Length: 351
Image (cartoon, rainbow, N blue to C red; front, side):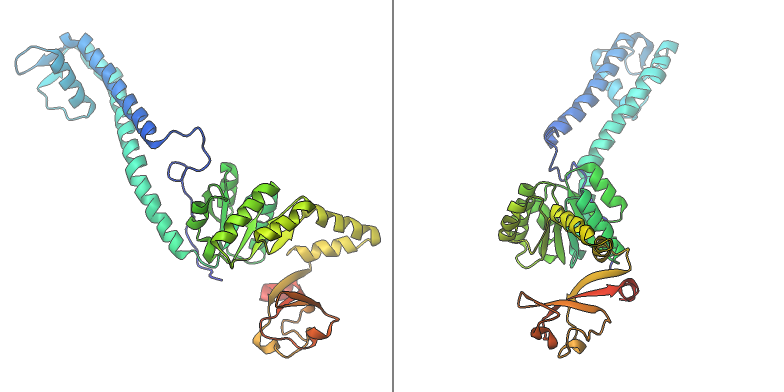
């Protein structure tokens, strides 16, 4: 897996709006900004017209309404040709106290609009294109709730570079938390084709789905499997009745936290240390770790109890079928076998 550090894949809400029902369309936002700017300019025109006696026109000595509009525009835009100027103390005070703050506000509106609708969008698109070009063999976590966040922490603890993890969620606070952990992030709908294409789902190492609701998770699995037929998918399903549906949708692994909790409880009832050992196997922080990997070239022809890693082989998967350590099929490992083994954490760190 690539360990190159990629910059954060972070699309601002205005550029890739997915979950903002109250968000204005671009044309409405632009109209509102310009409307506010011209409203402020109209206030300055009114102030200058009321105080036109304090202005002096060096051309003809008369201040008409057109002169007021002209003076307002060159004043707000800080052009200042000098042909019309405030001469009375009150006019100069008005320019300093009223017109100058409005001038600054109008400039901020125009500069901010130009940045938001031109510079920033161009920068975001260019930045995302560069990130997309580098995204390959990465982990995609769809949903950063309790399970998704814990999965990311465990991946990082097992040595995965956070820059090789992409998190998609609709909640801004969760996206911020994932970004703080060093992950690439995208605020959006994980069941949307365009969102998944943006993170190059077909090039992913594996996909972890934890949407919080079984129906949403299954829909996401269907979408991912449609876009990435060969990428392994693991999904969290809370209702046992939905586990078969998740597998039919294309999930390779279905994790039921309720069932796992039941296993731990049953294990603790049968022995004081069974539950501890099961939790130890599942987490990287314990003394041992459960790991799945492909058989190495030097292990081909050996038995499952002669692994080069020094781990304890428990099971192999051959052509999708599992074989336990007691079965004759594991006495001779073959190319393509997937090994499930228990290793100690020192071995894991060395790997």
